[in-house]
Image 1 (cartoon, helix red, strand yellow):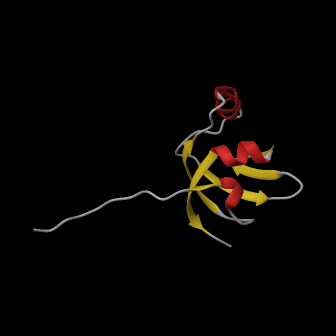
Image 2 (cartoon, helix red, strand yellow):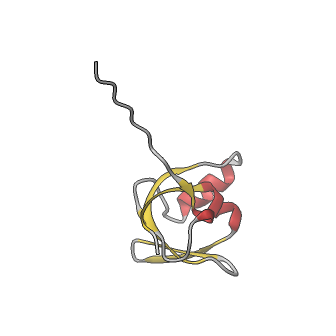
Length: 85
């Protein structure tokens, strides 16, 4: 008998290194207002994301848009990394 397992691994955006790229797999935060704020910025699951800067704030590129976010928002965005630099 063959047993197959499948797991999806993702990392909070705040844990990635500069210039990392990937796809947003989840947006999770206990505060629903934070999740709504992220969605209002046009950041949604399934989108490709690039982390361009980590200090003094996180700067992400989603599509053609660059957005500056704080660490709490970066912790709420879970990414499946496709390219680490």
